Image (cartoon, rainbow, N blue to C red; front, side):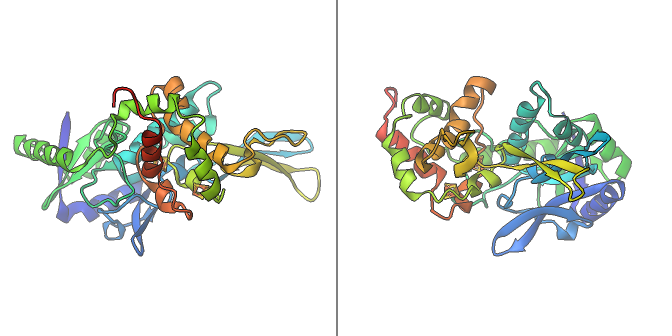
Length: 345
Ligand code: SF4
Ligand code: SF4
C-alpha cells in the first residue's frame, strides 16, 4: 500500500493545484450544523470535520434532473452532460453508497450517462472521527472503515494529512502537485493506532449481528410495524432523496411549444410517493404509506442482498435526519427486532 504525507500548511496549495486541473467539490458548512458538497477553490472553504451532508455525493453521479435526449422533427440525439471533477472529502458511508450505485448502473443494460460521469470523477475519501451525530449507524452497517472505491483516502492528524494512494489516478495527482512527502513506518503505525481506537468508539447498536438483519426481513413482511408507520409517514419522499443508495428515476418527455422539438429528461423519483406504483388503469400496487415504507426497508435490507449480496444502507443517517415525522431507521429496526425475535438472538 502506498501512502503519502501532506503537511497541513500545504493543504491549501493542494486544493488550489487540484482546482487548476478540474472542478473540486468538497463539504462546506451551511450553518446550523448542516453541510453540503459544493465547488471550492481553496482549502479554507472546506469543512474537514462534518456530519453527512444534506445530499450525498450521488448528486454528481446522477443529477436530480438530467436531459438524456433531445430531438427535432428530423433529428434525435442522445445527451450526456458532465463536468470532469474531483470530489474531496467523501466519508466511508458515502463511498459505500457510490459502490452500491456502481453495481446498479453497471448492470445490463448499462447506464451510459452514469458510467461516463463516474469515469470522469476522481474520488478522494476522508476518514471520519467520533463527531458524527446520533442518527448515524455506519458501524452497524460495516461502513465505518475505508473499503475501496476511492483514488485517494485522507486521514487527518494534528500536523499532517496522510493520503492512501489507491489508484494510478491518485498516484498521478500526488506526483503532479509535487507537494507530498513519502510516508514512513511511523506514519503507518500512527494510522493503525487511530483505526484501532476508532473500532472501539464506533459501536454496533443493534442487539443482533448485522448479517442477521436479512434474516429479520425474511420474517417481518406482515409486521404490525408497517401499520404503525402507515399512521406516521407523511409520504414526502425526503428519505429517498437524501439516501446515497436510492437510485429510482422517472423519465419525462417535454415537447417545446413549437411541437417540432423537445427533450427527454429524467429526474429523481421516490417510492414513498403515492404515484410511484400506480399503473395504467389506476391500480396501485402500494397504495398505502405503510406498504411503501415496507418497500423502502426491503429495498435496503432484503432485495439487494439477494441480487447484489450486500445491504443498500450505509448507515449514513440521512433518512432519519431528514424525516419530518421523526421516523428513525434505527428505531424501526429495533421495533422489528422486538416484534420478530430471531431464534439465534
Ligand atoms: S437508508 Fe437511511 S441510513 Fe441507510 S443509506 Fe439510506 S439514508 Fe443512509
Ligand atoms: S422522510 Fe419520513 S415522512 Fe417523509 S416519506 Fe420518508 S419516512 Fe415518510
